Length: 287
Image (tube, rainbow, N blue to C red):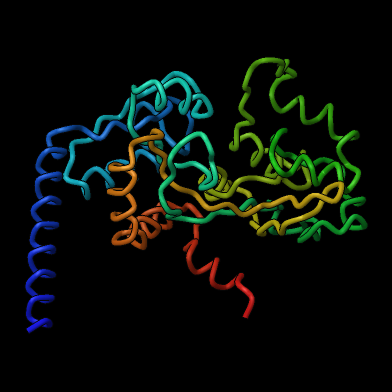
């Protein structure tokens, strides 16, 4: 008798949950999913909707059963949390570090890495942070403020590359202003032979590596240590929503749990090198 009562209560609870879920879906389906996107920050996004985050946004909105509204910005994505998401102008940012404290992040849906990029033929033998190998390097193309800067300092190449690095942004002063190191420029520095190696974030550089007429090779960058501090080169990526919007965060988490592999495959099909964050975590766990 007790077992019957438990099963009946369970079935009633499940039915109620389905009803609530259906009601929430009906209520939210009419509302557009507003996604922040920069007008000119390829390969992430552009005004024509050609970036990989544009494509992801389309797919996520479709899976949620909501119309998509891309909230385009003349400002770089680095400003979107404060000026758009937290200001209520959009609801979702498609790619943020999973540990970003400014927002509610979803569970990670892909993991990505920085890469050393060298010429496939005759490129330097750089695979790690061995200082001896780095002393044979003349010019290194990287973005200031990225993890690469700390390790270039560690291997003793920062000072002699400083003028060259500033040349990559036209010697523009960076004081109180964000200036992007264009991934296409970093890659062209290697293909043209100006730089011996570039250190780049895989998702933003891979499309330009594929377009290069000079064969290039990508090598994953291992983590390093600078002044006793760990410097990481692999990061899990999540979608971000406003603090307090647990309902949307939870809906996106459910979507990722069900469709995460398909979203990652979509990125891979677009030439974006990503991996399964859950698999990477299991592989890294002590056995």
